[in-house]
Image (cartoon, rainbow, N blue to C red):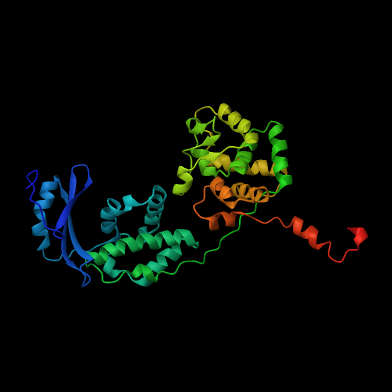
Length: 344
């Protein structure tokens, strides 16, 4: 006996807190395999104390199976309060967007849903791979809960067919285009400094938005705390080259607050493409700046490990996808084939 709560043997169940002053009782009522490694659980929420939830477990274990219908809505709430919280913030946001896309079938009894229903809602809501994949992932999580609680026997989401993934290759800016950006910045167009900062540091637009003055270590010429997407990018410093340090300083000193980029996303992209047009360079996306970083580094730095760390990649294979081979020297070389010695 500890704190007035009777200890229970392994596998009998437990109680967890799902919100402030709200606990859920979880009872193990059986197993889905002979090895007893995949338990079948029955849950009940709404207890105000952990002791109440624990005390209800023996009752919960012997309750008759519920006959009420289960919907995606009723399955989502307990999942969102537990397993979903273990996902990254970015993944959680994607699941919330997927939830909105599933509104047409959200309150239908899950037993009534067919493979055709699931495929139809995915096809209706999106024609691209990643949003469809998020819808399928959320449905899979909810179907797994429905199977565990014996509302359905099969996870139908696994039969959803996704649109074909069409990866668009990012193209880096060339040296003449980078020179045009410098000339534009030098002529007084401050915004162009953001483009140069992305090219020389490998920062993404989202990292510009997140960056604050206190994240900059001027002595060590690094930015730490604005990284996005992966753990590697979040925990690795962004290195600022000598030539771009005055640009960063001017951008921060010109900001009305502590933000590096004091614009809305709409304004940022408008100013970006206005700059592209004014500089008379190719209409490449802001993400091409990051590809430019890796490509230029590959021409001047033989150690790919160094490039990988500058790009804040976890794998060499990722870094290699960012490096675009400059074919100009190769073209110059093959053009020499068959030339007379005096022409060389």
